[in-house]
Length: 394
Image (cartoon, rainbow, N blue to C red):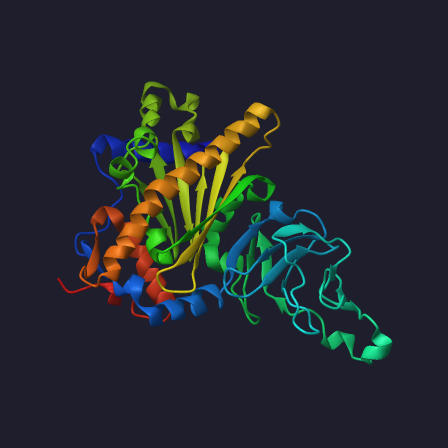
């Protein structure tokens, strides 16, 4: 984002701090009561897995993850085994990670490079980077088949703004611009996400519903109470600048150091050193953007309604060259991982235990948690349910 826009957001946050308030929804909407079936109903869980994770495009990679022809990543977190690669023309392709012979898995590694294409380890059938069947082992004994009818099963994939979206099932798919909208797409593109540098990846396999885990990323009301010695020590609690982009949103969280800007002329501000943006990209992505780092969280439903998987990846926005810089990046990764594991997901796991009891009937979202209200209405509407149906009568 341009300096002028960053300064505008800093002024907005300073105004919130001075007035002792935060972004809020109207009084006629909150408090907002959410039935625990939102997190525990198995039929709703199955519907979400189908509609949200298989039948719509999801952000699954960045341009920097597969920069060169033959680079690939695999993903099976939607329940569909995928391989995402870049062909010789530089275009992104996504395929079912399954050989057309006997459904053997083509690639059993999370990432790498296959510049010569893919070879099935079962019977060595070969495919090029466009998914075409190019060779059948022992064709003289196997018998002649039409290779054009046995290409890899291609899936919708699009690359824009440094992001790669893939749909896990064939058929028509929304474009990235349709998903993000006219304003959010270019804004994300301004962060140059396609040129980031991977630091490390981590995994959380948690006994809690995926939406319950997502809730922890969507408000700063808990910063002080839950993170007093970490996030709460450096950032304001219960102050956020919220913007909604259809089903997506952005939250600006100010650091306590932002007060220093009041002592300077705006032309001398280094505004973005005093706050960070947290984006929610529907339905399962949290993207925390700061001056140096991008923290990327992907949340996927597990096998059961009370299980989920979070993948955490840390990227730097510029290359870390010296050993000191590399250590700084790794230290940041370990810090964020620890905070999420020991605080956010500790709470989420225990909340899920309370919901499983069947005795606690609802959660309550306040006016200052409008991000969660909009989030849950979007979840319902997107699977064909009444968005206001999540509310309980008071």
